[in-house]
Amino acid sequence: MVIKVYGSMFSFATLRVLLCLAEKDIDFELITVDLASEEHKKPHMLALNPFGQVPAFEDGDLKLFESRAIARYISRTYAGKGTDLINPDPKKAALEDVWLEVEAHKFDPVVGKLVWELCMKRFLFGQNGDEDIVNEEEKKLGSVLDVYEARLSESKYLGGDSFSLADLSHAPMTNFLMGTEMKRVFNARPHVSAWVADMLARPACVKVFGVSAY
Image 1 (cartoon, helix red, strand yellow):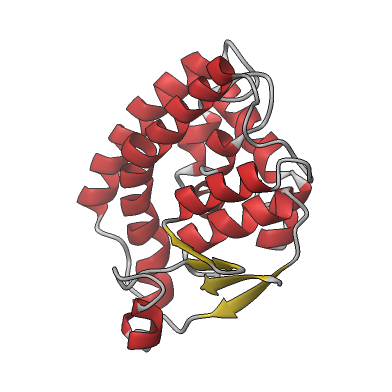
Image 2 (image 1 turned 120 degrees about the horizontal axis):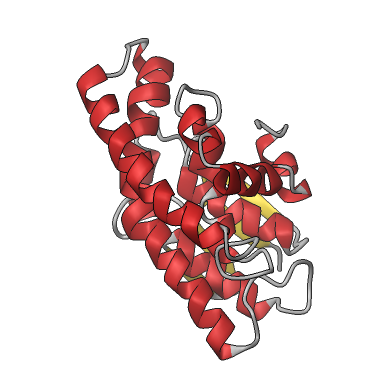
């Protein structure tokens, strides 16, 4: 049976799952959910994700939600295909897990606010972002990326020498920010800048996003 992903190309969490599938070279069917009409809140979608969010995921009789959990499942279940996204060495995998947690709890909250103010408000409502919020979150982003710069001065990727889920999980929101003035915050840090360029030039990113945005 073909893997099914219920989601939207406007959902960063959906894009995370699609990137993982592309890296693993796995065929899938994307079933587009109309976020504008709040289809994700309808009973048929709540049966797949009780929190009324996307994506939802089906692989045979297995149904999952939460994009990072889905990505871990794909990486473990299809370990023999495509890119190895989880290191088989437990200690190295633990380092990857650390940075996947950093992405979820340190990077995502800050970048999510910036993407909303700089991208989504303009796209959805034709409004400019709140400058005070943007300035505040830009400072937070700089502090987070200072930690990344230190880490990436020691290894090519966040988890070590190999591209992993820890890196992949950053790609959707980073790709959006590369089209905004926040690109300068990344470019001001040479190791971070090189990491972003490498990540967004990967064939999976080019395939899912259409073109490399860097």
